[in-house]
Image (cartoon, rainbow, N blue to C red; front, side, top):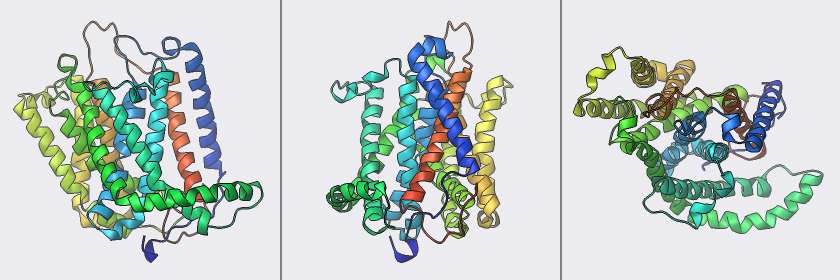
Length: 404
């Protein structure tokens, strides 16, 4: 990280009114999750044998994994492709990915009927299972993300502001342990970066493979033998917009100096990725002879047009304009549309398109499922806030203390 990219912990209050509200929502979600573990899935959710997954898979897992793609895309751009001017964006992107995958695992445990068996893929491998590959890749990639973040933690203990009180005693115990870990992580960083990209390519695509085995249970607008490739393309496509959304939110929440020029420069790649994804999606529909389904007037077409029209075509048209990319609000809105479009794609594939035979009623999430999901999102935001206040993550000057 160059001098102009020097990061430092933010000097701001943690418990603001907004943070307190998020903490209340996180506690409520955790309480409902405890209730779910006590009474089981049948009595706490609307999941059934016919509808075995709901928003905890579509939103908490599938969407969460996709939106965490900013970690490997930004790290690859800055360090593997040697675009060092984006170095200031790497730490927050890796932190977002680290927290995103951590909360994905927590959300997955809420969805599992026997969450205490989540460790079993480690010692009971099944090479023919897509879920096994996803599980191993996610566990390994999460380990890689934590190793990539070790130097940031070590930097805080070595050269950051001094700790006081009991924190100083704890810091004195941790500091000697961090030195060898940080030294290893720095030496191994090139390997970790490459490994992170490879693992991301594997499990991002494998999430799409989960639905390839269900051709008779899915709407043809979303079913495709090329779902793995489209899941991977959409994850790459949303990586930079997610970094832009995260950076814009941090600018507002912490009253920092805006990074619009750097983010606008990063956004130049997104129209190309959007065009490639849109072309692949339309060619796939045409090759399967279902392209005219998009104008059939069926209820599912509304979801398809919302996903593609608002999440791909509109931000593509917006981001082509250099004027909009240089606009702080315009850039944020365009990037947010891409993020929402990819989130809607995962919801469409796993929920809207999934229509197995002999189902008595369509799945509608229970209030408890919604509360747990909102609690997870609130917890993720609070964890990000704590991390950037505690560790040197965000680079550049900041205008003052946040009161949000």
